Image (cartoon, rainbow, N blue to C red; front, side):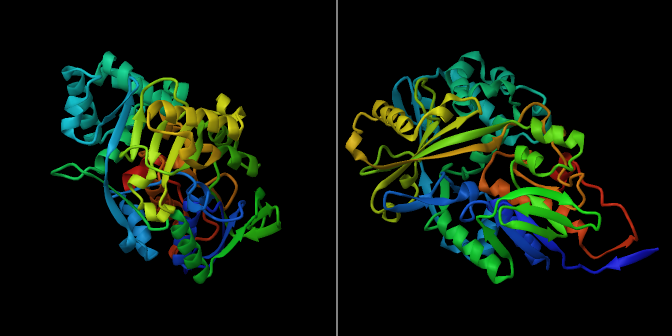
Length: 467
């Protein structure tokens, strides 16, 4: 015996108000579902949130949109913001051997003094090969260091790749698969246009403060309830099929709950997880970030990003946002980000903001001879311990399922990004894929037997094949 379920309006809770949670709530609302979005912080945004530094409000972490970020651009179009975007040609710097070099085009690459001609050829061939490679699953079985040494050579690896890997991953690079560097190269190479190979990056005027404000207003206008300052503490499926969600504001009941928190937090929130899926959630290694926003009287250089290979500098790179963003948006000043990716045991977590400021400012003085301490108008430190899931060997084969053992409870987070690096475009794509393949089938109009089992959940590999 079967019955037809005609798109019932279910009560959904989406836990987490970052771009992933916002996009999931958006898709569920568009499908006629009743949605409540819960965010522990006072406002939505998560890692994409904005804050104030000095007298300027801008993104708490650096974000940029590439021309190839079609998922994000599509979402911005839905919000009526894509047409307002500003597109700018940017330049790339490289700091090595205590010198700053431009690495913004092929000619500058060929002139790059630290590498010989053969080294440059092998490095260029490595990038070219990775950018066009499709079988990324095979790279999950190879350590990133082994793969880069094989293609670029030991000398180029030690001079270029190893310092960059350590800057981004610390000693965790030893556990990372080659799919990490493939994803990194593939995204950045896609930013290059044909012909002159220009890097065209974009942003929405007003930054993510504009995006998030519009997103929240759009959701609320379409009936989504947003509860900020509401921290989830426990989620449990009930015998009647509902889900009880305990929060700092009290206990609420829903038909479905989607958790977008990091995997370690999912394991804490959901005691009904199966033993194996709990192990998989807890096994995911995360890198965090300590990121300083620095407001300056004048620019440092003319590079959007300056990659660093010299040891001893306390940050991963220098991101000079006002080479992209009009300085008029930053009060006529320059805005620089100094990120440091760090594992849980990195000593930087023990430092005070004042100690971080002292070290980071000393690093700028070392890199830029014209820099002066009184150029600094404001300095603010952001800390986030669960930012990027480390793509270890056979990563996609070991991910926990999105449909958990707790009935009607789903866990969708950035750890499920299996063929890209962590960025807003990949987050939006993850939300779209999870909605279509995991969430929508639980309520779409289908003919199904009474008391039927839940639909089969695609594996990460099946999801990638369909997306």
